[in-house]
Length: 188
Image 1 (cartoon, helix red, strand yellow):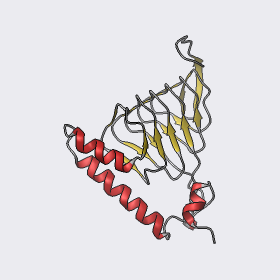
Image 2 (cartoon, helix red, strand yellow):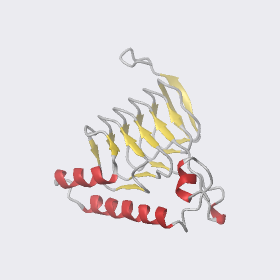
Image 3 (cartoon, one colour):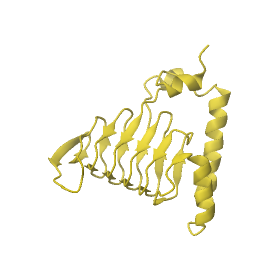
Image 4 (cartoon, one colour):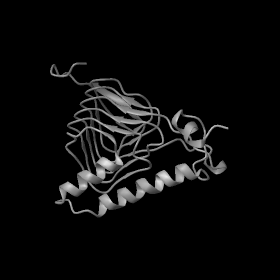
């Protein structure tokens, strides 16, 4: 029999509500998020220690992750150097969430999972990937399975339900490309 965690990690329907391993891992991550969110912003040493324990796949040169910050597991989050996550970010990391280098994510952003079979107690997650040099405005939701190309900017309050190509300005609900960004310093 395949474990629910194994199903989760390969993107199949799984039941997280009755699997002791997943429940324990979520509880551990939520406890660490609570500690982080209760730690004074000036206590950088403690905040960094908690983040290292919570997010094992994060470059040491991440600029900052502001509180409140929440994840489900932590081990599926990958954040590149030079990135900044503003207040009230929720990364529902039941699948891999990759945030590239030099990404700036505005406040109140969320990266959720697919909940079509929620009434049956089942959920499914798909990876989300932000390439390098991305700017995400405030109140943006990025849905499962989405990739945002390098150097793109997503406007505030957007719902990103489909892939966004590299080097564009996109916004709206649903998010759509508005114009191409011409920046010779980006390798796109």
